[in-house]
Length: 246
Image (cartoon, rainbow, N blue to C red; front, side, top):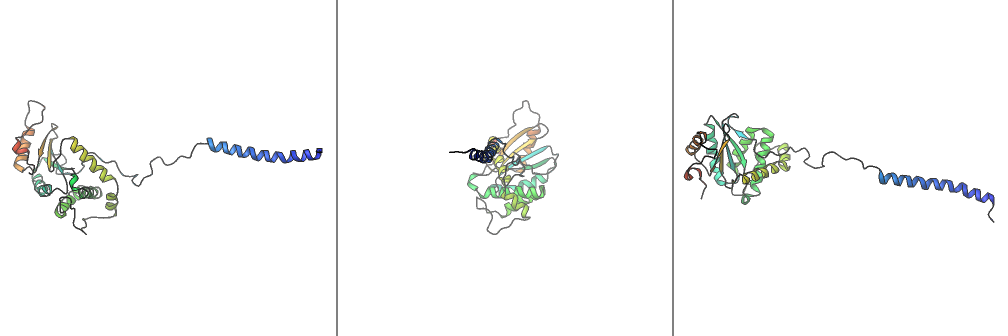
């Protein structure tokens, strides 16, 4: 028979057990409804600090305030571009009111070497500025075997340092190059080399295909700067504007 003493003993033992159970329940409820801890405000990535890639090239050769801009669409593995670039750069250097701008147009048949060399040039420019960029373009054309074969084995580009290596290993130059290729296709440019001559004063432009020679470029400049009866893009005869290698 249960005595009063036994009842009191059970009651005293029940209270601590009840308190423990309630404490556990409270902790479980708090855990379920408490807000999650906040992580970093930016995504965790190996390239968090990579700057956004511009859609057009930032590299120019010639006077910054020149009236005319000559955009060269080229592939660093293109043999025709390799032969044409030194001639074009020499011609631009002799002009007083024109500057040269590079625009990557990678041909799929030259991959992956073409994109690798393009990223090398972009990272050289990022590390050393305009002069370093154009010096790298010249060096690449002097050393690459072309047609997708790339540089000979054990060939080290000038100025290669850890910063440039890290840049080439990042996504930044490749994102920039892809944007330029996409933009060229949107503009209807498919062949390399191609040129777009822009009059910064009137914002009129002319697309020239192939390795256009200096006299034809001067004719294009004259036509582009001449008064026009309409806003249509001026056109040169086909034998002048289309020098695509056959």
